[in-house]
Image (cartoon, rainbow, N blue to C red; front, side, top):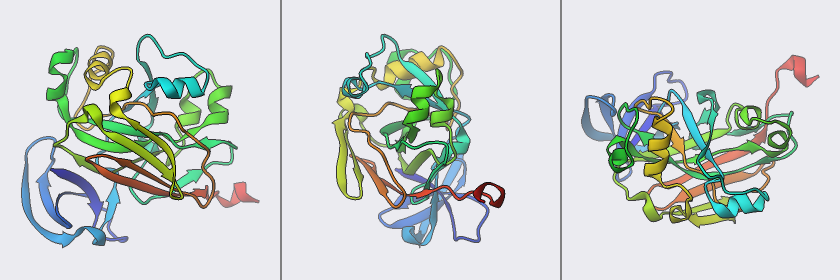
Length: 263
């Protein structure tokens, strides 16, 4: 099943949950993470504005989880998962702009499979990790590469508003072990790999993360990016496709600054 969050139109302020049947949306009453009821499809998918498909309490990210990506930055594959955070304020949905902040001159895309947690857990065992997965979606771990090189920690490089496009929906029925990930910029292929190439698999990442912090329904784990990351510029369009999920597409523009900073 495909789960979305959306606004009915540009004037709407109240997000709604929905499920997709072909090109139609049915409302979900309640929360898909708890008790809910599906209503029959009654509106067209193209008539709504898609939002990030969940609102996590935290976005856990995994660095250098593809050996080829570590190699392209001349770094070693970590012996244990390398975790960092992106703030929830960095989230935007399918179709929203990636905003290029003036603090950076080298901003890059990173295509990733995102795991959505379905129920609370702590000290989760690898063999039971799948029981805690609600579904899967697509993420773009947008990164200010020059700032990442400057800072010993990656909060600034990873944390700008709009630096975590997520969507277009959550797919709940999927085998994640060998999915093709492809990223295109303006239609040109930049990244292509399989989730089979991950250094640490999903069960390991969930168990490792939950040994540090409690996982909550709606939390997200970004599982790392393959090789091929590259710079994005004002006017570009970034499209990330993951087999079995769909395509997350976002245009790119320079950040719109307030008047006191733009003069």
